[in-house]
Structure formats: C-alpha cells, structure tokens
Image (tube, rainbow, N blue to C red; front, side, top):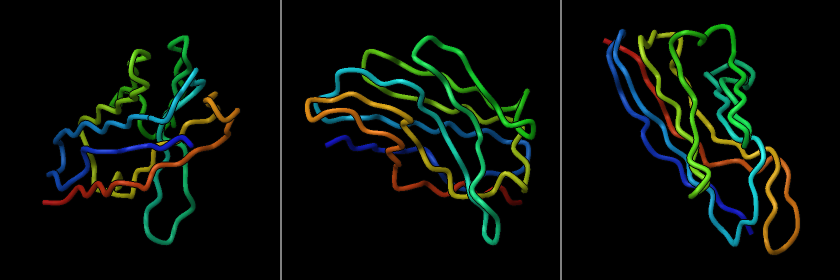
Length: 121
C-alpha cells in the first residue's frame, strides 16, 4: 500500500512564502507524475502543479511565475515552493501521485490527507 505524507502548510502574510513537501512510501518501484491540487471552501478542487519523473512540469495559470514544483526521485518526494502568496491562494493543498508502481501492483491517483495554507494579514 502506498501512503503520502505531507508537511509545510500554515499561516503566512500576503507576499510571503511557504514550502510544501510530500513523500510517498510503501515498497515503491516507480512514481510517475506527482504534484498538488487545492480546494478552497465552496469551490471545486483545482490543479496547482504536476511534475513527471522526467522533470516535465505543468502549472495552473494562476500560479505561474509564483510557484515552483520540484521532486527528488531518490526518495519519491515532491516539493511546492510558493512565493508572493495572495489571499486567494488560501486552500487545502493535497498531494497526488498520478501513477505509482509498488510491490502490490500499480495504483492510480493516490491522495495525501491535505494541508491547510492560509494567506492572511
């Protein structure tokens, strides 16, 4: 069974920065794309950023130029460096592994528990 452990959320003032991390564990053989979605109260969950095992990235237009996604393939960790944060970035940020191979087979769309990011003065 694959599990995701997230960290790094919290309260930050507008214009500030936060770094989220998410590590996949559980007899993993390979991890394909991984990244982050977010959901604010009363809204639909939306893509923030994804990164492939080859380093290819995809970003939501709303975060381009402010957020940077990266990963460490050695320990199956994905990072989201968030800069110039705005109040509208306030949401629960959830890590996702799109496809992962592990000793029990292949799993799709494995989600983390979510971490709250609040941008407020």
